[in-house]
Image (tube, rainbow, N blue to C red; front, side):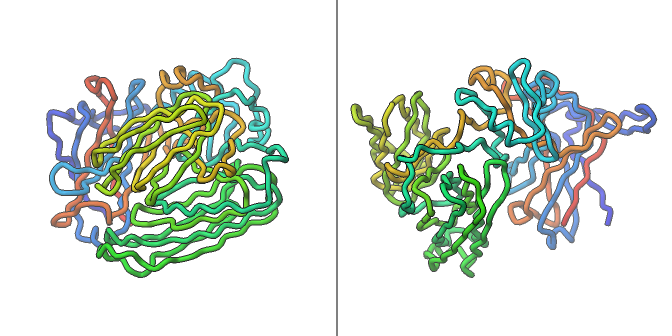
Amino acid sequence: MLRDVKLTGPEDRISEPFKGKFGDEKTNFRNFTSRFVYFQLEEPAIKNASIAKVQIRFKDELAKGYVFKVGAHSAPQWNYKWNLLYDPFQRQLEEEYDTIYADSNISVYSLNDNASIFSDLTDLFSDLEAESTLAIQPSVSLFPGTDELLEDEITAMNTTVDTTLRGKHTFLTYVDGNEISIDIEKQDLNWYNGTDDLRMEIVSGTGKTVASAIIPDDGDITDHRGLGKTQISHIRSTGLNRGTYKIIVDANDDTLIKKLRVSSSKLVVENNLFVYTPTRLFTLTEEEQPVSLMTLHEEGLQIIDISNKNTTCNVTIDKIAVTQHAKIGPSSSLQEINIPAGDLKIASKIYFSFTEGSYFDPVKCNVVPLENNFDWLKKNNVDYVIMKNRSVISENGWVIAETEWNIDDLYIRNNILGFSTNIEHPADSSQIDIPVDWIKIILE
């Protein structure tokens, strides 16, 4: 069924239509001259949909540093759930640096001169030097895992995480033999309406999923704030090569990970974690690294101790929903982080273990989450960049890009769903003049 998408302006943020020919194509487009331009769809059938997609056909005339976002109305007043529609960073990266590997999913760029070109990702990872810095887009799951550990670092024991964690976490473990098995316990908080599924994947260094499992919602989708029943799942994968693997536990913040047991003596959690109960963490970094700490409730107000063999420092968490900043390292020995009250969100670019013996360095070289900023690349001495290939279509000088939302996350009133564009630059949003040919909304 075809319906009209209504462009609601404001009128001073869009040009009059440009009609004519562009090459062999008849055109009828407008220029968007401001960050925010609004449009909406009125459709009774929207109540029966689960996904809303927006496609926009426009010209890629974004200057360096600009991105094109689209927001869908998510709550009364001016509240939007923003998605990235298009970022020209990858196009600009391709123009300035060599592509040394590409397949249907990802591209790898070298910021160094005279870099070799690879047809196999495994060969590229094998060629990396330990001192290299590799920036990986956060949505890319592949990574250059360490191939082997010293024999005295490996034991036959399992690793168990008894600390209760909340929400999504990514772990890295080392497979010494040819198989791995994992036991996980899940419990729903039931603080929010809706289903609370947990999805778990074991992923190899080249991004291949070698095993997966789903623990569904416990059957209670209400928000009565009573803990649900404990659910248990087991996952096992055989025929593996020796090396590092990721364990991705994908769950929302209404879900607790009560226990995780892995058939390996080595297990760390990557970058960000949300500890629900008191715990101790261990990390090792030879350079000073920033760490952000935040609690959402009064129960999480506490003093965090960070110590190594020689020094101890304290970080006071005395405000709710306010990020406190700390420094970890540099240290040549393991540092211990004591979290006496739990209920703490931790954001960083380092790895943490839950026991001293299970800590290991899971990657072959220095790996950092990519920020789409050329100054950031230079500041962090990045040698290689890995990005997902853009999910865009080039057509007669135009670009067609797409993004989507779950209908359950959006605000619909009188069968009307509103949207806004946001063509933004972090420092300067005054130079906007982007031709937009059409906007299409797809309900599924």
